[in-house]
Length: 256
Length: 304
Image (cartoon, rainbow over all chains, first blue to last red; front, side, top):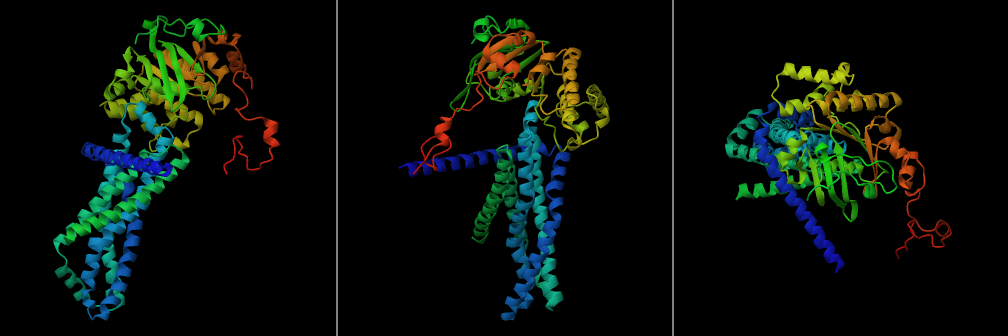
C-alpha cells in the first residue's frame, strides 16, 4: 500500500516537473522575440554556445564521416554498389547522424555549460541580486541563452554534416579509390531538398529541446554545489533522451 | 489589517527583560512597518505575530542568533517571499497587494547588499555598477559613465572600474556591490551581513561607508548583522530577534545594559545560556555506553 502511495507521489512529482518544464519553455519561447531586440546579448550567447563548440563539432563530424565512409564502402562493395557511397553518406548524415550527433554533442558541451552557469549564478545570489534590482532574471539571463542556443545548434549541425561529408569522401575516394565523379554526382542526383529540410527541421526541434532543458535545469537547480552538479547531469540525461525520442517520432513522421 | 498603535515592539512584548527604551517610531515616520507577521517554512514557524518598524533616515540593526530568521526578514521586506499572515508596508504600500510589476517598481526604490556581494561575474566592475542604469534608463553612455565613476569614487574604487569581480578581494567586492546598490539613488538600503569575512581594515571601510551613505544620501538603512561591536558603533537603533519575535529593541547602549538573559548572552557573546551550546541530544553517558553498536547516533532505535 505504502509502495503504491510512494509510486503515485513519485508520478505526481514527475508530472509536476514536466508541467513546470513545459510552462517554462513556453515562457522562454514567448520572450525570445523580445530578446532579439537586444542582439548583443544573444550574439554573445551564440558565441558561447556555438563558436566555443565548433572545434568539438568539427572533430567529431570528421571522424563520424570517415567511419561512415569506411563502413559504407565495405558494405556497398559486397553488393557491387560502391558508387552509392556518396548518397548513402549524404542521406545518413543529413537525416540521422548529423542532427542527432550534433545535438548530443551540443547537450554535452554547451548544454552543461549553460546549466552550470545559471545554477552557479543562483548559488552565488546573482539571480536574487537581479530580482532585487527589479530585473527579471528569466528575461535577462535565461532567454538570451535559450535564443543563442536555439540559433547555434542548427548552424553547428550544418557544419557537422559538411565536415562529415568531407570525411566520408576522404576515406571513400582518397583512401579506398571510389571514383570521385561518381561519389559527388550520385549524391547530387539522390539527395533532394526534402532530405535537407528533414535535417533542418530535426535540428530545430533538437535545439528547442536541448536549449530549454539546459536553461530549465540551471534555473531550477538547488543553489548548492551538489544541486548544480545534479542539474548538470540531468541536462545531459534528459537532453539525450529527448533527442533520441524526438528523432524516432520525427523519422516516423517523415517516413509516413 | 491595521498597524498597531505603536509601530514598533511594545515594551511588554518586545522588551520583556526591559532591555531598553522601545524604538518610538511613529507610523508616519516609518519607511517599513511590519504588523502581525507570521511566516512558516514547512512545520517550523519562523515568525509568529511579529510587529516592528524602521524609521526613515536611520540606520537600524537587526541582530539575533543564527537561524533566528534575520535574512528571512529581509526577504519578506523585499518581497522575495510572502508572509503567511500579517502586513508589510514599505513606503506606505502593502507588499501583499502589489503585482509583480508593482513589486519591481518598489524594488527600484530599494538597494540591497548581499552577504557575498552577488556581483555579476561575467561583467566588469564598471558594468556591474552600470547594470541597473542600463536596464532601467535610457541615459546616454556619457552620463552612465559619469554616474558610475561617481559612485565608484564614493566607495574608493574608481581605479578598479575595469577589473573583473574575480580579481577583487572580499572587501572590494562588497564596496562595488554597495556602489551598485546606490546607483539608482534608493530610499532604502538593506545590508545582509555586510561584515562577514572582512579583515579589520575592510571592515572599518565598510562601516564608515554605511554611515556616510546613510547621512550623505539621506537614505534609510537596515543592517542585518551578528557583529555586535561593529554594528553598535553605527546603528541608531537595534532590534534583537530570537524565537521568531523581537526580544529587545533600543539604542545599542541600552541593549548592552539589559538584564534580559537572551540579550545579555547575545551582546556579551556567551557560549551557553537561553540559547544552549548543545543541540538537543540524548543523555551523553548512556549514548556512549550503549551496548548496541547499531544504535543510531541520534539516540533513536535502530532499524532492524
